[in-house]
Length: 188
Image (tube, rainbow, N blue to C red; front, side, top):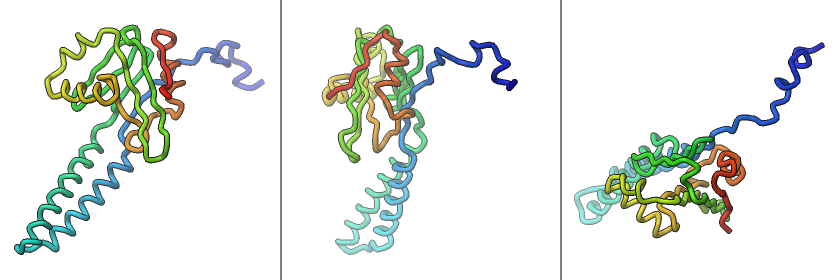
């Protein structure tokens, strides 16, 4: 007799496993590589700059690449951009977390990646977005307005090259977590 066969039947076979939270995080490899590359190019431009007219352009290029390196380095510290669990979905827009329960969501649409250099998108369409969007600071509201113009939903995040989902089967993972409380569909 083995230890597994000594257990009662219900403990050996978990028929209804607990749903695993689904997350989308920024790609550390992509942002780290861009930060290091931009920093090296900035150092190269700064080292070759002088006070001549073309040297000033090199200083400007060095400053631009240094700014890009800082933006990419900050992206390394962001962490999760989306967390979905059995309660609902939370999205990070800028420095603000916006969360809602599955019951308050009209639908979730997933646009899959079409090719390796393309990012997919997860868009959350709320039944009544007014209270949630109205409570946000103006800087976050500007981002959600841009999201709405570009994607049709105020709450949308990319995934793919720049952000990695915890599960490659995005639609199925979100569908399992939503558990028939809201539709999750793939946008074609």
